[in-house]
Image 1 (spheres, rainbow, N blue to C red):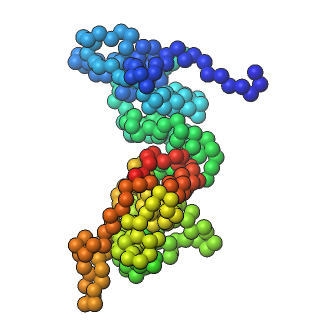
Image 2 (cartoon, one colour):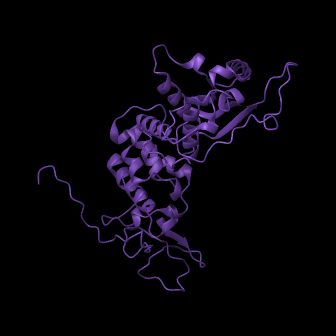
Length: 326
């Protein structure tokens, strides 16, 4: 067979597209927590479709790729540690029924305790994302294949890791450098670790890669919004109302799009807009909304921004976007 790999033993498969139920056949040591149920009698059982009746004391669970991702995590854990995630038999079933409760009641703390014996940092991170109790938070197959543990690629921060910076400061230099400077000084004086291009871009570093890596490594985005930045009266390149599908990639829009993508992954915890009105001759600022500084942007996808987003996500080992911006 040479280097050919073949998948075998798929007799437990069901179609999630046809909304078939999981549990017609299973190996209990590889089942995710949601495949276990607490019956009215207080017993934890497998949601077994083969044996199910209306009086079983539990509902059946439709099949989902997320179930397979947990099972993949169980296999990877065995490969990395030489031990099964939960004590099991040679047939990949939990060795005793009382272990059903251990899977059903697993917590983040118990998971991290088990992962503590995984010596490879990248493998430990991938396992943490696969063995997430919340099925919606598990990586899908595409993002597993993009993980640096498998690709060997570089990255600034892995999903699930603590960020290096508290705040990423996003602004239009042509209109809001003064505001950004004041804000940077105020935030740093309060002990916050702020990524600001004027201070944090390394000499010779590609500026676009630099700010994307800085944003990936930050906990919060603070974005400065002003008429001159996003609703310029004469420059279409700084007016979001004039955006079209084929518009060029604007770095401010790219930062905000990347931040929303990272927020969906839980890497950015919050986005804080700073809305700046027009500065009058008396030194006072107008109301941002009442004076018409906020643009009414079209509901479109700017293709160049999406292309750049994919490029930088891939460079950071984060895979394809979770969703398409519209």
